[in-house]
Length: 500
Image 1 (tube, helix red, strand yellow):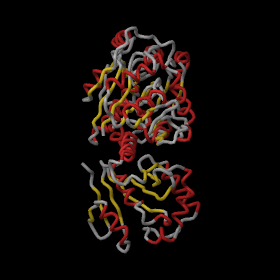
Image 2 (image 1 turned 30 degrees about the vertical axis):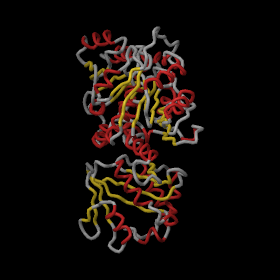
Image 3 (image 1 turned 120 degrees about the horizontal axis):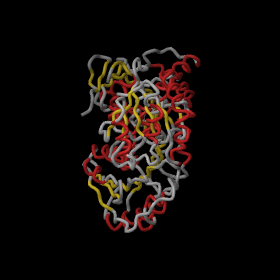
Image 4 (image 1 turned 135 degrees about the vertical axis):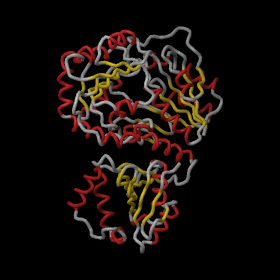
């Protein structure tokens, strides 16, 4: 599977688009995809960094007269030339690709149509703004985003279940879940993005340092226009440490109690680790994320012009209700998004077996259908507890399961029709160990629902040990787990060890 990413970074665009593409590129490379990038050389382009991460870069033809975007929503200014010119340049440099991934607010349907016609490839579009695409798959990791918002007859991977986070975030999530509110001086991470054109970093520092009892870490890249000024200021204050680059953002976040940042893609990183945050939008395209986070009561939001007057109060509010913000954030994103995206792309390309079904995280909208399945005599026949639950018992149980940050409650669906056809649960027993529970709508027995679900769980959760308890007289399920390469350790106990 030959995959090429068309994405840019610059002092206008920032680094977020490239960083999330790198997460997906690394994950695709891990499943033997041939991955490369196509980027426009410009100030702040990150081409050298992409190459340092082990990916080749095709350099687009540099523009002779760089354009200064008129504002932060001048996306054509980000592209530095017309869409047609960029598409022609791409076609002249890229002769062959099976998948082209676009992550650029100036690149949409017109560009994609030209590339599909020229290269006979599939298009995957990463977006946040519900723009028009001619794509085979659209990834929009915005909190609360619904697939129906895109008017495309294509695969839509919408919401934070598909957030493109480095695998280190899911790795450290278990530790983050166990954290409690700071008992001593809180550690504050200030990270306003790779560029921070308005210098919100310094506004925040001047408004908090010396006025609240806390230690501060400032993450700001040398690419930022105010870099020298911020570094000099940090050097003069003992409670402030500056970091120019971090190759393990998850570990850095885990080491802090509060974050102050912009509501971009980093929002999902903070949420995955339950990091209470003050967010300050730096661009118009961040407003939707900010609104969603505020509506979920996951953050405290301030505008740039409110920093000096309101940030101390916001900081104190966040600290006083730390546990609530921690819990709410953990519920927003589990850090498994990139595995789900790669699995979906493999299914679409038909490079793996069992392409007819998918696992989607259950929501409150699924409570009734799960109850109907639970009450069916065929479901109860081999359940460890054969008693039929009352509606109130089921409602209480399922709400508790849906709000547990350590468990996974999946609905098994037909991938194309989205019709629900069963349940697969992973309930945490201890660190890195989960108990598997699976049942299928009795009307859909015999079509491979359960076997597909177990295989899909292997793709999404390869790094943990899965346990299953199957009654001895349930021969169909005993055979199911045996065929799924679970090791029988006793008459009714099966184990699947981590997959290397």
